[in-house]
Length: 129
Image 1 (cartoon, rainbow, N blue to C red):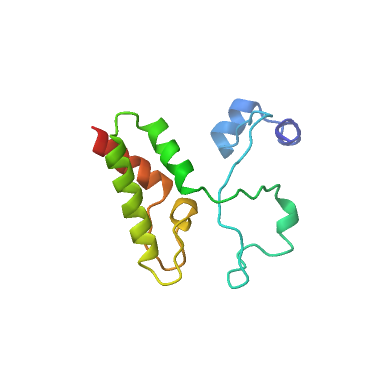
Image 2 (cartoon, rainbow, N blue to C red):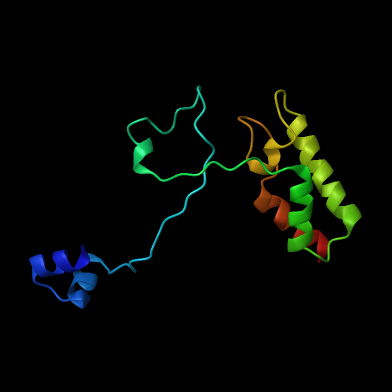
């Protein structure tokens, strides 16, 4: 598409980049996005748009898997501290009515408190330092 646009406008690649901020993208370039699946009450992705995306549904991360993940990312974190961190994440999630302990690892429940995997990793790295 880039070459067709460049030829149609009669511009060089540098002129196209300077004047229109359009640049060639590597043919292997892909965009990856993560999201919670649509629910019956929150249909953020319509049935018209859904076929436009290639998507894969991943199972929720279990508590044991999260502990193994934290151990691999933060080997300096003591096992007792890792277990305490996972207990805090579980307590935050179950403090909300309807919260599920595993939801804290896959994303925050609607209106609830939780620690995302990114937040757990950040806390674990600071605790290990």
